[in-house]
Image (cartoon, rainbow, N blue to C red; front, side, top):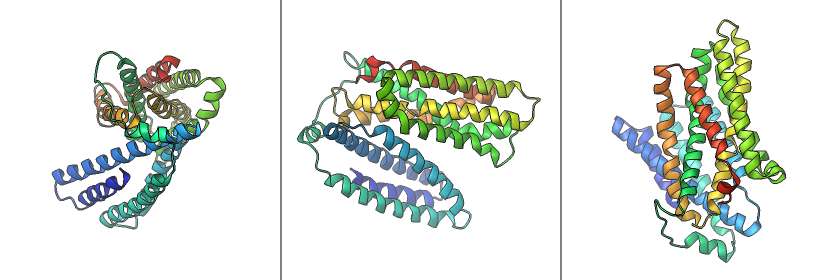
Length: 322
C-alpha cells in the first residue's frame, strides 16, 4: 500500500507545484491527500500487527514522532523557501520524501509477523454502517472528530488569535502554536507510562478534561485583560495552549489503539474511521472561522476547547475497551 502511495504523492506534488489554475491545484491536493490517507492506513495497520506480536502498543509514541516530523517540516519549509523557489522546493522535497517512504515500506514489508496478525490484516469482513454493534464506533468517530477539530483550529487560527486579538508582536505570535505542539508531543510520549499506572481511560479522561478547562479559562482571562500589556496576555495564552496540547495529545493514539482492538480488522475499520474523522480537517477550522466572524476569534477557540472537553468526557473504559 505504501509503494502504491508513493507515485500518487509524487503526482499530486507535481500538479501542485506546476499548477496554473485552481482546478489543477485542487486535483493535486486531492492526490496528496489520497497518498497520505493510504500511507496512514497501512502504517497504523502494521503498528497494530506489531502490537499483536510483541504485546507493546506503539501508537502513542509513533504519533508523537509524527508530530515532531510535522513541526520539523514546517520549520524546514519556512527556512528553505527563503532560498529555494517553490516549484523545485516542492518537487525536490517530494522526491526525497518518496525515497524515504519507499525505504520504510520495504522494511515494514520485511517484518516477520505472527500468522494471526497477517490473518487479521487480510480478512475480508463486512462492517455495517449502522445498527447493532456500531454504536461504539460512532462514539469514537465523534470523539476524535472533536479532538481533531480543536487541534487543527490551533494550526489555522492560533497565530492569528495571538497577533490580531491579543496584539502579540511577531514573531512571538507563533509561540502559541509551538507550545501547543510541544504539549501534544509531551503527552503522547508519556501516555503509555501514565496510562499503565493510572488506567488509560482514567488518565485520558481526567487529563484531557482538566487541560481543556485550563485552556478555556486562559482564553477567557486573556480576552478580559484587554487593557493589560501584550506580554501578560502572551504568558496567559501560552499556559492555555500548552494545556490544550496536553489534552489533545492522548486522544488520537489511544482511540486508534482502541478501535484496532475491536472485532473488525484494522484494514477494514480504519479507512472508514479516517474517512469521517478527516472531515475535521475540512470542516472544523472553516466553521470556527465563520463563528469568529459572527462573534470573536477568542470565543471560537473557546468552542474548540469545549469540544476537546467533550472528547475527554467520552474517554471511558467501556469505549476504550475496543
